[in-house]
Length: 437
Image (cartoon, rainbow, N blue to C red):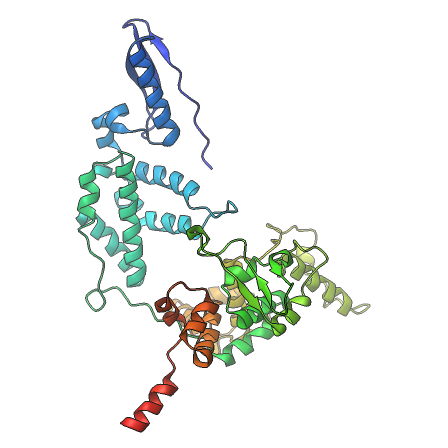
């Protein structure tokens, strides 16, 4: 978090007899602002205004009144990005104080903007420059929808800059004339629609995952909850007073919109959770820390006297982990565990496979550029991600209970969002065609 600046002092400028205050502008320079006759009511009012503005926007005081139009013209794109990211680091936070994914998205969006136009004046950034940045996203292989999303974020950066009087409003107005890329009318690739995970691939992956990751998967399959909701679950968050338990996440996707979220837990899911509960109700149900402890305990129990196969690599004895395991999984760690399980369940074949006793580093160094590309393609075809589990069960719920039931189970406010997750039931359409066609 950026350090809050101290309040600048109200001082007397002896040669002129005026009150003066010194501020630091976005370009790092120290600048004296004269407020009028020292100790006059007008100078005190002006001083109060400047202090209030600096408290509201400590990294970017209003240039039109404090630093002058000339300083605003010198404000670079890099300086604007630093000021916005300082704002975003405070703004994009959950109720528990953790940063949301939006902050990382803005940082990724800023990279080509920084590399192409960092030293340029922010006020001069126009539609052609925005299209150049957009082309950089296309050349990087991003899909059309992601590109449109990131271009929209760049526009929001400049909209925020206008609200802080860092750039003229005409700069943002000009950027709004750049429309989004349209399907079939651009070189940007289209993203593939997300569908349900294949049951055969899912079942083949499970044996290669630890018990806690398998528990996350099974809980999602039984409740259709989001990956993040499953990762944050604690026993203290579950109402067990009725036959069907109700899990109310402390943090969920739509909490900032003041929406509630309740996840029913049926008998099968209850039986699953009972095998993970600890004596402390505030413990996370699925925990990397406990997963590692269970792994070490199982390895020690299976070790035989005189058998060195179960011992750690002697080269790693005495070494400490760079980062201790977390108390709970997050969505990224959950996805990484699933990807690794998929790679173990479906290793590349032929020349692309790792040889016996070959380390990962030596295997990857042995492959040619074309072979590495083939391995990446193979992995993409044999990997799935946890959010696909919602698609799988949502389709089944819609087929058996209808669209409204799927909407309620998924926690969607609108049915058209549910359509994305619950595939349309083709069986009904086939029956209609058979009878009427």
